[in-house]
Image (tube, rainbow, N blue to C red; front, side, top):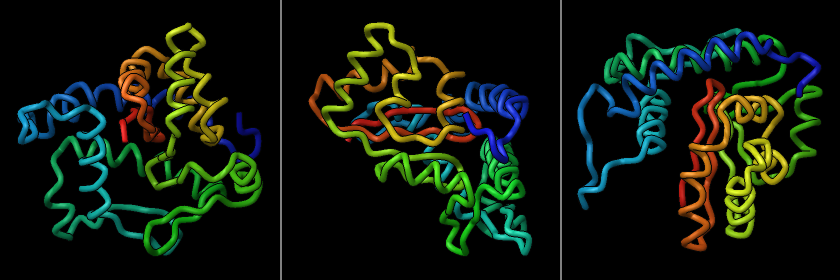
Length: 213
């Protein structure tokens, strides 16, 4: 795990607890408590709901002079957020801004993210299939790696198998370890069964999901 400028594990545990409450009461149940279905009458997945919330949160962001992020509470993007979005977003911003103030991350004017110092060196060694965002990591996973992860999780190898096959940063790896493998196995194995590639997402506050490509 990160040893230089790392965010304390206690903070991760706190955010983890908060996001579980948020997801159970809001995002996974449907933002605003409404049941949302796609046109083909299939229920939208928890990952799709979280991504939709992240998209809404992006429209409400503003970059502060000190390099941290906050929400523009006077903007139309913020007004469109649900209470669940705002609670989720505040947890994400707190975690992101901790890394900014620790000198690990730099947020650009377009809200893209760059690792700094030792964190940047570690990131460059991981490879190029994962992108860092203000909310966490998004990784493209080939069909062969998707199959390997499914097979490994089914064999009981544990969630840290993901870190050995996908170049997520150390902070994300710690979160994956806390989450465990059962929900991730249920999401990635259908992708493996179809023979497709997948996309893996992990937020700084503990929401992880696979989506078939």
